[in-house]
Image (tube, rainbow, N blue to C red; front, side, top):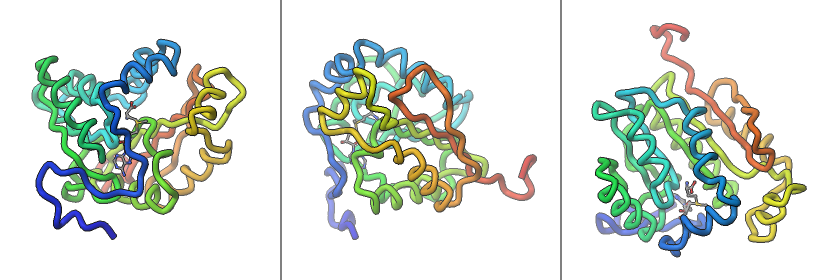
Length: 226
Ligand SMILES: C[S@@+](CC[C@H](N)C(=O)[O-])C[C@H]1O[C@@H](n2cnc3c(N)ncnc32)[C@H](O)[C@@H]1O
């Protein structure tokens, strides 16, 4: 149980997830770790998330906010993007990046396992390279929270390391303590199904060391396709 009720507005939540507080160095580190492929990977993530103009989007564990800012450019002025991260330092960097870019995104400190949003708020939730920061029980709780804040028919795109550690990047991921077994994909798929998502798709990309999972909340019975 987390005691966020006693926390001041804007204060980082308590979490057992591994937060990243060296936010100022994060973009450089991820560019280096990806051998300069981080922007291309992000473009692929956006293509697979397929945000539409006017949609309401949430990025959980948003880090320095780059993906959320790009998502806002896709949903346009009628759309709305929010980003949450459990590290106040990440939220601060995200906010100043959005301000410099002249893009309106609401960033706030919050934990995935206790999202400060009403049921059925979002059309799309994204989570990139963050689920491996959580112990299993928080992963389950976080995925259930994502399910709760999605509208019927809303989609979740989760991107993480695949556990295929044969490649150079895979070995680096393991070296930096972010590796997990090849079974992680199956475990995440099971958690998504348990949380009440519909069929989970494993999306094929050119990035073998990365896992792309997409799932949708079943549409309400009176909606087309429900
Ligand atoms: C590897 S970073 C990924 C950041 C960003 N999504 C990206 O793709 O670059 C993982 C992020 O998850 C955040 N985090 C860790 N535990 C969390 C939690 N319980 N709730 C929300 N964010 C959390 C960390 O502070 C960190 O910013």
